[in-house]
Amino acid sequence: RAKAEGKNIYRVYNQAWDSRSERKMLLEKELHKALLKEEFILHYQPQIDLATGEMVGAEALIRWSHPRMGLISPGEFIPLAEETGLIVPIGEWVIKEACLQARKWREAGLPPIGIAVNISPRQFNKPDLVETILGIIEQTNADPRYLELEITESVAMFDTEQVMEKLDKLKSRGIPIAMDDFGTGYSSLSYLKKLPIDKLKIDRSFLVEVTPENANDNASIVAAIISLARNLNLRVIAEGVENAEQLEFLKAHRCDEGQGYYFQRPVPSEELEKLLQKRAAG
Ligand code: C2E
Ligand code: MG
Ligand code: MG
Ligand code: MG
Image (cartoon, rainbow, N blue to C red):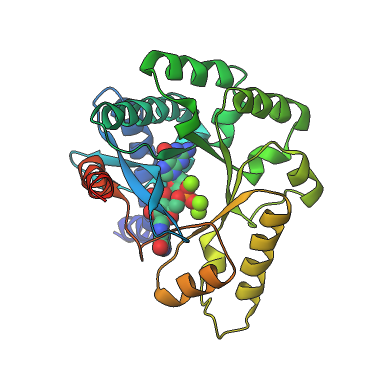
């Protein structure tokens, strides 16, 4: 009897750990099948030109809806996909889906906007990344000027020559490149100058508590990134704009664009289409 109790105690101690690793294993198993079972969709979050108030772009954000487990956030499954290498086929699906969607909107006569897709480090580091992307563009008859790639500082940190070569090739085909989550990584400023990128995305953690009146550290950082971008001739967009105070601050500092819940949450393609129709109507 004592032995049985001991076993129960052991089980209780390990339950938290067990259920975490069990969920991870389950997710990994399900992730392998998710593409074939067509469980992914893209949502789109508008990017707003702060001078005109017009939507000028949208970021494609992947969503996984599992029939039994429900909605699983990319914050949970993208790292797993990255770890297992599944990010490569998933990432290709994202690019293709975004290009097909952009073509549908174009064929419907809607105003063209840039569609930004996230490229994970492992995906970027594949030797055939450029050929894959150019292949998808050709196959879907997409306009490369409206397919923006978001990379992070961790991509830019390693193997500078190869990174530079890939970015140069993409750039020469007219594909814009944005540096996502800027300010949270380790890329050096001199490297930033050399990279053929078009846009900095200020990480949303820096927007917290930014107001026109509040002279706090975050406000200084945001102002510094905006002026850095301007001096390097890069466009700059703030992520995570959640209120009017942040927007006022960004406008006062002449930040080019904003993206965040204050404007719009990420929405399904049908809803973005309605926004595009509204824009087309004037
Ligand atoms: P990210 O690329 O930095 O995308 C922005 C994230 O911030 C999105 O979260 C978006 O929903 C969220 N967000 C936007 N506005 C606000 C706001 O005002 N307040 C707050 N609190 N959050 C806001 P989401 O969709 O959960 O995606 C999380 C991350 O997952 C993305 O961060 C990106 O790193 C990754 N991810 C999403 N889709 C893809 C994809 O297709 N491929 C890859 N490789 N990564 C993706
Ligand atoms: Mg992004
Ligand atoms: Mg980001
Ligand atoms: Mg982020």
